[in-house]
Amino acid sequence: MITEPRVARREDIPGMHAVRRAVRENRLTTDAVTEASYAPAMFETGRGWVVEVDGAVAGFAVGNARTGNIWALFVHPDHEGLGIGRALMDVMVDWLFAQGLERLNLTTEPGTRAQRFYETAGWTRVGVDARGDAAFELARPA
Image 1: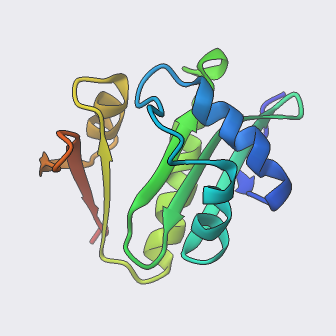
Image 2 (image 1 turned 90 degrees about the vertical axis):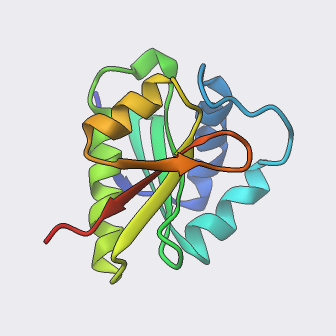
Image 3 (image 1 turned 180 degrees about the vertical axis):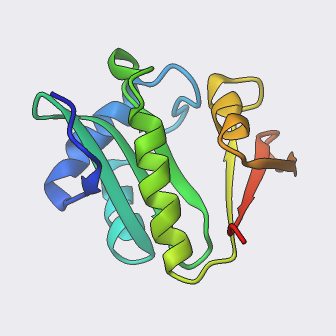
């Protein structure tokens, strides 16, 4: 059973990190992001959400309420194509705009399914960052 997105809790972090390490695109290539990296992003500068399938974290999102940066949005490969990513993005974007932000931003590896996902969802490509990732923005709806 797939759950609706809910606010992530500390006890979700191991499952979130397992999803992050399982993805096929935008893979972690260093140990710069560890389980310890999640708590500040979720509880100090923003908020996180999870969707579970049969009681296990299947996808998660984390957004920064100060900068509007999408810190993470990942779905386990076993659960792709079920609408989990879109449900997580929608709840996160709604919450970030409710915090008073006018514009959100993110980067993703170019030429990936993630890039197409954001383009289809209405994000605008605004360039390339210093690492060569595609940079996107989303303006608050009028």
